[in-house]
Length: 309
Picture 1 (spheres, one colour):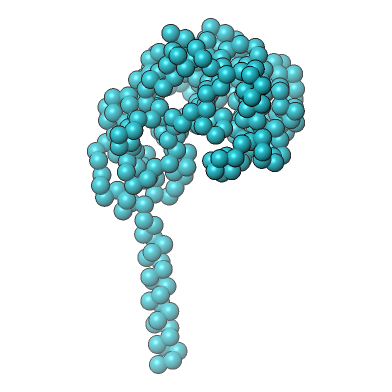
Picture 2: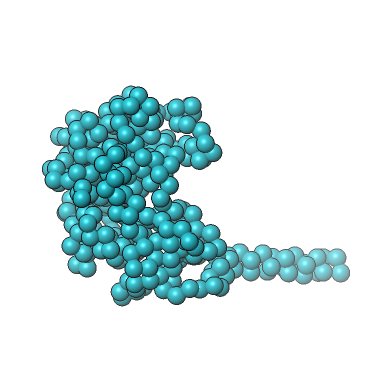
């Protein structure tokens, strides 16, 4: 079995879903997770999750020493563009692994090895959880210098890594919608040469083997997604992970205050529940706006009566 380490650099304070994330990591004991952070320790973390105490200034210094440039890391979000460099940036922590990759923390993992099995790892140098572009929230790189240095093949990497602006360098320079509609990144005019473009060019010239798969769920419809005993299931379809980045900022989205993450829970558009909640859609309705709208309508009618008899 080829070894895998998934890396996250996260600064500030741990997100409200961290215990859920850790539980889904626990259910993947053959995958290691390495979290570089100043958020403090995680006493309930499973043995395959390691927190390395590191500040944002420490990462900046590493970038100077290991990448040979002055990094434009003004805020933690700038690190999104640095993800393809982690094989070099954190090389001293990753040298024992066959594959390394990136993970976000707003993720619920299913069974990783059932999707990224021995054959997949044997055949591919790069693995993405999306079929249209390199997925920054989860990807895997074979741990060898030619792959770890792929970011240097972008004609814009120096500009990107030195800038304080965000370029979606790890993915596709913000062109997700066009790629979802079937366009190739090489046919889309972009401001920078992103990692998706670099990887597709290398693949087309038979320099590397790449798997662009569709194993991640980022949208949640009326039907909830079930996490049960380490598996993510939607109806009859199993997913490797749920990335709830598109819904966690909604006003109606709620994280549970579970003392212990249950062995089974549901993910709805409005949050997490440990039982199936068929009336959950009612929580998505913005009742305050409706109430204010009705109130304004009644107020207008009253004023019309007063003004016009």
